Length: 293
Image 1 (cartoon, helix red, strand yellow):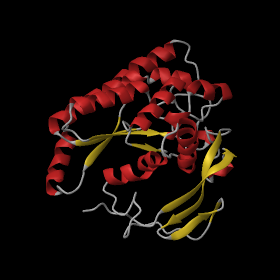
Image 2 (cartoon, one colour):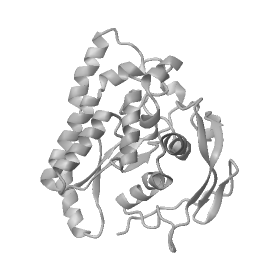
Image 3 (cartoon, one colour):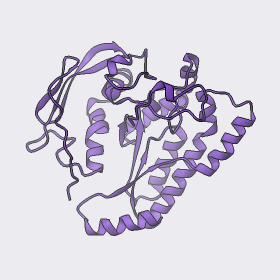
Image 4 (cartoon, one colour):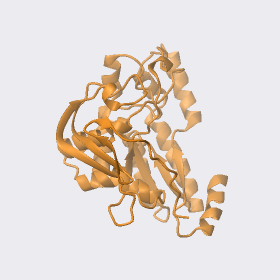
């Protein structure tokens, strides 16, 4: 509440910008109740158990708290990495109830495509992440919400974590994993090819919408004066995901074995080719990008 109040003060100084508060929505006190129950019930070391210890109800409660406070303060908010059908339903319901609040919603690649039953069958805890990996039914509802425009953008939530930090115990295992390299392949293969989501909608969800939400001038658009950040994709290129293919410092990948159709073949950063025919080329040219202050 205090952060939202302070943000509003700053917003008044920069009325031409969209200043916003980004929130991870899981209610911690309720999580403790469910985690204690899972541990008391044999404490299985699975991703299913992690899901049970941090169920979608904790997302719904946190979303209710955040959006209710935002409805009072009028603060712009972003609800990040919504992982379940319950979470996105609660978010959309809040947006309808409080139309004067600018609310935008995010989901991730892994919450769109991975489910705990499939990952548990493969073994290991590499898929531990917060919020947890859910069910296939949650996957499908998130795809529907993305296609309908209820979800504003999709992120990889890239958080590299070596397999040794996962271990064999679910609660102390480090959460997170990488996924940036799979952003377009997953959305093109599972979204465009399999579910018929238009390419324009995919570009909006990956590039245009987050750029606008965070006031990133020159990003998310093809026009004179923009930053010439371009990705050329081969919509028909099919590859099976491997850890090595992702070109990450991470030594495992929960998407390993997924066959995806639609891969980037060239990437241009600031007008310079930096990825060509599957290989990184040239020198890094990253720079700080200020908001439109």
